[in-house]
Amino acid sequence: MAGKDCVISVGDVDVEIVWFDSMGAKSSSILVKTPSVSILVDPGIAVMHPSFPASYEDKIRWFNEGYRRILTAAKEADVITLTHYHYDHFIDFEPRVYIGKTILAKNPNKYINDSQRKRALSFYKNLLEHLGYNLETYLSSPQDTLEIPDPLKHIPKAMAKDYGDYSSRKKELIKKGLKWFWGRVEKWRRYPIIPELRLGKTRIFYADNKCFSFGRTRICFSRPLFHGIEFSRVGWILMVMIEYKGIKIMHTSDVNGPIIEDYVDYILSFKPDILFLDGPPTYLLGYTMNRINLGRAINNGLAIIDGLTDKKPYIIYDHHVVREKNFIERTKPVWRKSAELGVFFKPASNICGYDPVVLGKQ
Image (cartoon, rainbow, N blue to C red; front, side, top):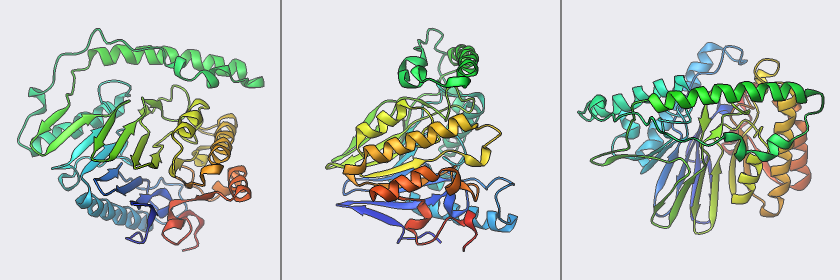
């Protein structure tokens, strides 16, 4: 389904839709091409969950098609970004994607949970073995004096928010989250350090809160952000910002809406021409997502649309949010607001000429 026609072009920058959830497999991968460099953002893909309304055969077919699209895009890429170590954001391990590339990756030594740390170890072990090296010989001593600031200082708006009847419960969750977080810090201080690597043409740099230049193209990354709500147990992610001669592309990775109010300011400060905004996981409503946090995500989406109206950007609203057929009804205000203001606001599949497969119109 995806192909060379799945492209958004602004000036000299082309952004190709590689694969997204709206196309039938979990992914949020794009290929950004500027005159100076080609960047493949988050080359990962995973099969849809059991409750997704499609046959198992269709889910596997979409997964395989997306996997092939990622391999094709990787051939054209000079740079690979990995915003975190979930399989819908990185493939472990496929030499055709990574060998000979510059890899800008989330630091696997801190701001990471146990499962992502395990996946990162596997990824770097496999990469090194493919190149004829042993990861164990590269690991360095733990950072037992590692200093980590209080993460709440970075989200003052979320912390000052009045949650009404939910306030006492929110305070309880924040207290539990902080206890969990400081426990994680102690783990990070004991981790053997996976270093950045320069192995011939294959180079790995940790991207957290850093910028990299390739000719006139600049790629910047956020500090580690919560994957969804405050102290989300699934870990941390990085946002990606790409700029070429004033043209700006932003990929929010997994902020889930965003749910956290302070991340809205971060997005608006960049003023993207093309914004890949991952929406809230409405398919988890009543499970790991409650209506309070869904409301926050919707209000934050409205603030982003309103704040970028003068810019008239392309906003691609996809990943998580299109994993169940009632997603438009459950996030109706953002669709209505974007239509009222004339803002381009669509799932990725619409760039390729069809509606999200979850709607069953294909």
